[in-house]
Image (cartoon, rainbow, N blue to C red; front, side, top):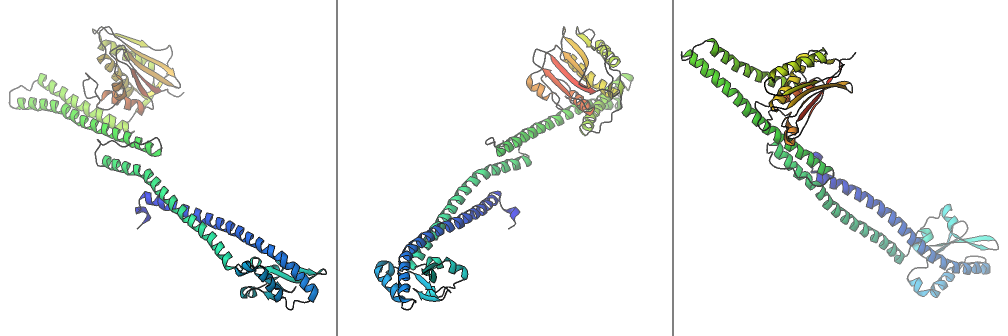
Length: 451
């Protein structure tokens, strides 16, 4: 099985197992070395205490006999005096002359030990009249232990090994439980993601905790909500487009059929009405194309320096003409000097006019509409402010969405979406501030012509 196909839980478990085994292996090696070393030192100290007594007897024996002949009897006597210890094998000794030649060995294993110069220096010297006449070794000095001592050392090693194995099992068990808790949310997120990819946008994404997994869940939930909203907008868009196209096309078809059948004359009045319907359809197509080009950063702009004072005064004059007879006050607020803007004049007029006509639709008699402009932070800030009905927070949040229509709104809901796309195509920003009964303020920025 390839590693890529192994579930994440088992990959993490495998990594944890490697780390735990390596760590416990190191702990086992260090603990065994230290404990066995301490046990050997303890055994060596016990042998050293025995060696002190026999060393004095060896000095006396050599002083009396001036040789090591018959020294075996001395060790036999020492063993009888320490009967129980001797039967337990604790009295292991090796005696050599100064050159390392074995004089006496209490066991066959000691006779087989290779005595190196370094090892001879570690032995206990037997000195008579200032001269070294022999070297005494205990079993532990030569790495030789009795059966009882060997069992003790093996017991130490086994105890540490058992502790390491038990610790390994506990660590892996706890690790598996923790990993299951960590990876379980991923399984739920995967299932939710599959549901989203299959088109099921009604199933909420589980959000658990405030950690990285919880944040990932929130991001996926936001994605689901956004996709659901986009899908709803798409459905509504198709329905609106179908509705907007169906009526004009039905009217055009009926008019044409009536004229072909001679029911209606093909005179100027009927042809003008047909042309109006065709212009409506053409405008709808143009608006959709403008949005698509702007969002793809492919909208052609004929940028040039624009005298904003002259431009805004002309727009204000047109707005006053449009609102004449509606008992609405239209104001123009511009400073004495305005920098020139760097924009497409036709598109800038479309932006401002869309905002003004929107304000005219949502104001009543006695309300005021203000067109305001001022330089700010290297840009020109232009605002359309009205004292009309205002908008609720929900409408404010979606007012620039394509095909979004607030309560009582007419048309396709493309005007403000196009306005936003055109502002951003110029490199500016647009936003809105509004509250029910407090009017609305649309603001956008446009670049200043560099001098």
